[in-house]
Length: 477
Image (tube, rainbow, N blue to C red; front, side, top):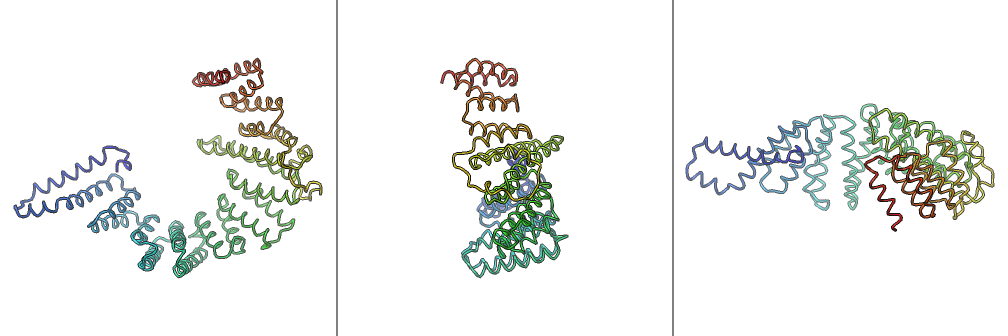
């Protein structure tokens, strides 16, 4: 209660109030000695149950909308004997006060399963009772949230009963029936979350690249176009289907997948790192098979930088600081991925001509000499071209420069990269310290002194002592 009410004295106050009520009841009643003796024999059990009920009733008044508290209260009561009446009182309160809450209704349908083990012969009856409860709940609350609770319940127990074929078959049949019922009434029953849950069941029953799954996801992404999870699921399934022959895998199929990525999915969910990674995983696979050129891959990276940067610009007018941080991290991730891709290019493969192709969306086949295995040592020339391209065509991030410095072997190039990294955010001490460590390591102490002076003019005053101490420590070590 103290945790829920955010008041360390809450429990103490409620308990005092409960005991005061008991004292008042005793003072207002005329009890014989015999009756008092009988009450004394049962004092502990009585006080436990009575105080618990009074505390519960007071808590409900204080936090009437807190379903989790009542659920936890049921869990606590299960640890004590002779609490059947109070337990039912709590369950009745949930049914009364949370009639339109899908989570509450699902809890009431399944609460009895907590006392039944997966190996118990009573499990069959308990699951049937739960299923009947859900049927009644869905009749009263036919909403996407309630159907989501039902699907989650069936899927969870199907996995729990993995060793019992008959129960798994029973639950699988209920799942199939539930998905069909949802499919028949998609306009009123379907949500993005529920569409994903149903997709999992279709994948389980028909396969990861089945037409049933693909058709379901195509409809779902039309209904919930801003769901990055649905787009990811659909495109992953489509890529798998093109690999195993479920759908055609020629140039037309590649163009269709690319169009779904760039024209729809990433336009609707430009902030999804998982979706961008899926696109570039697929793009790099196509490049490895010779289906796209160096220029086409680079075009996609440059386009990605532009889209995420645009998203940052839009986000900047909002107050969502977490959203801005995620977009900054996403941009850094994509830029680092671009550099790593360039590092893995075949020896002699240049990005210079790819710069001119950065806005070319041609689907022409690459030349045969581009269809080579990447070298293991790393293409440093391509990396250097990559960080020049980013510097000219995007907004480089500190993470991007750190990765370039890790791959670069020439000290002068490293110095230039450190210099550029410090300009991204001059108030950030970490790039300055990395730059100073680099110069001290090269024994370029005059330049280090100049860089330190510049840094001290940019770093916030409250960080100056720690920054100065870190710089001095470079010489003592």
